[in-house]
Length: 473
Image (cartoon, rainbow, N blue to C red):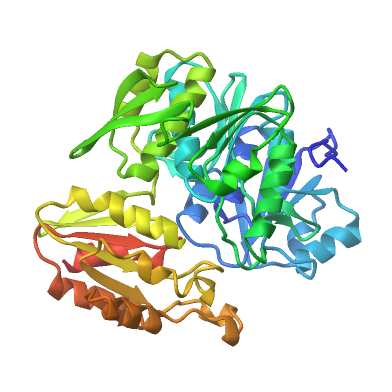
């Protein structure tokens, strides 16, 4: 069965989204409203900022799942991937015989239909890479559409309905819906794809790295012989997966043998200057406010993609200088008493390590204080227990919170923040365990000093620790 074949009916006026407050579902709801559809939604926990965003769009949101929410008989129900078959709205939807689909099916039908799809995939860097490419296309006058898993500061949104021929889609390897356990990205038909790297993650749905590789193998197999895949050449999993493919494969990375690779790099806060080489010759020099080598590889793939779309190098360079980044990715939330508070989405051990390493050169006059909340289904499992201690080497002071949602994980599989702190102390690191967010704030108010940068890492709201810390400071 080809998941990319559109099976959603054409006569649609009203659409209901179950679990609308997720980042992707909320963006889809806003987009559908902008397209002129009557949109309703529901979620278990309706809270800002997504609830405010949706209400400002004029979308009616029900707090909690109830069969009554679909009793009006919407023409289409979009079912979020966190929703089970036992959900009362799903039960009602099935009993009423309503037309339903998954989020990526809706994206295909309402956003990507008849567009050239630029799909960004990989364990890390998808949101940043997608955002970079969307902004370059915008600055080149291509008027792109996009659907991205983070809010682009240049647009103030994570979606856009452009009139150009390209749509940028962040392709997620997570499962699609209760009725479709395949990866979301299998629904897309890339004109061009970017693969940023493949590591083990999402331990709640993948058994091991081979299971993850199977999902990416299926995605790459779906890129047509007319399509192009830009792949991070320094990743062994990527190298293995891209061997002998029907599509055109172009490698990028740090290795001089890759088609695109990084040249000289220098840091001049707030700028990072980097040289790009194409087949060994200098292609151009660029400057960006993004921090860290991992982001330079994200930028490098953006350069390669833009060049392949025939965008002039000077336009690409100008786009990097005006790119403001993404919310929750190295986002400075404020400064008090000379102490900078930064918010970041990092949660996988590799992302934590690379984010700390990236930010360290930008606090030359003080310490880097790393604050980490294990919150994802993978980070709350002990699968990464022995790897996390290797991620904090560049931090001067480390604060680890007890996972607030650890009750979701079977006791035998649970991650221990106390053990992580003990392992870090064995390495001679200044590490501390905290049971709750309030005690972290109290600790930082007394310990942080002028020149320090507090890097707060979590994939969630972290009890609004950023604003509360700034207020306490």
